[in-house]
Length: 455
Image (cartoon, rainbow, N blue to C red; front, top):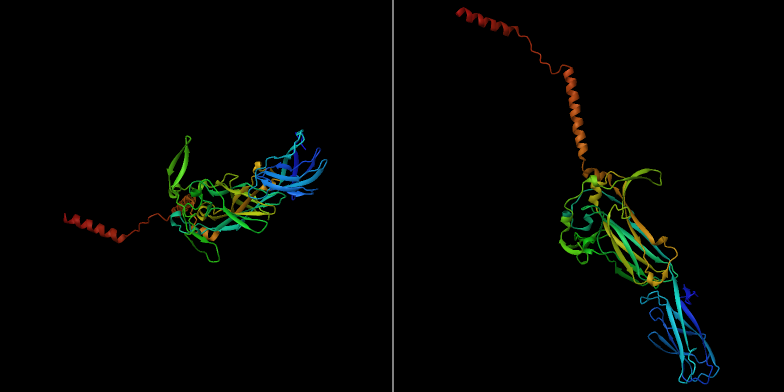
């Protein structure tokens, strides 16, 4: 009990609050003696009567009021002892975790002179403890990029983008109390600078809750601009099976036209129409790519990699919120993010590194108003990473040659040509040898003599 008189109790596997009552009749016979108990029906189920003595029974329930019959009549100097167990609600109607207030008073049809000891009040602060754990994996953990570079206008199916990448997050409640109103912001690396996609989200992220009774609930997560972030190019979806087949246009939620984007200017909202094509007309040059870093692998080898994630701000990210109405003890929730690795981005900019590490991150948030406490919050954060390796043979066929390589090659060719010319000149290759022809000289001399004699 706190200094202010508030009772404090911690609930675990036993999710009940037990209150012992003792009622004594210090006067004459009390006819139709009743005990009325007010409680928080939003957080507590109807009470159960335990360890009763005498003619004590639960007579009726009215909203947040329980009526207990103490006998008719209740004999003089009679003392009744019993216990009421209030079970804390653990279902979807669970209320907020504010202190619980109990009020009780006795009454009968007989006249009473002293009513001061006929009432009782108590405030109980309930500590609910939960142990949440968030884990994340990438499926597959390793992908490869390469081959032909396709522009957005050439794409029809999602498979034209690149390999499928699924980031899966699992939330587990290891107890001892159930959790509700858990918000989980998920940051996915969506695009680089304008026109540079990383992970292209194909459909709205879904979460599947598996309850302790093996029942399952499936619902979608939410985000601010689904039109901007979920398949904005309206590509047709293929299901990943042994043989990919056309998913069709049944999934209308994913075939969403991108028409408007709200842009906040000077405190107002201006509607600016723009298409996906217009947003990505100007693709940044390769010189603007993310700087690589050298790391040492477990094998001891030093490699050059590029990290694309939200924490380092090497990607433009958006937040996805997955709200859990209820997560029972030992229950789990699985959230899937289905995306495609944008092949063109990495073939153009990152064909000369060891691999690109693309990471998404997630965290758990507890609603403080629920009154749920968690001792260990270190496992409330998780990250899923995909390692994308360049497919060297395929990339070499399509990788653009840097301009400086062409310039150096041209200068080197001119230099070699100059050296060859210089060598030939030194060897006298370019000197013109005029041969001496005596026959021609004599003929010219004879011709001139004839002209002189005629004159």
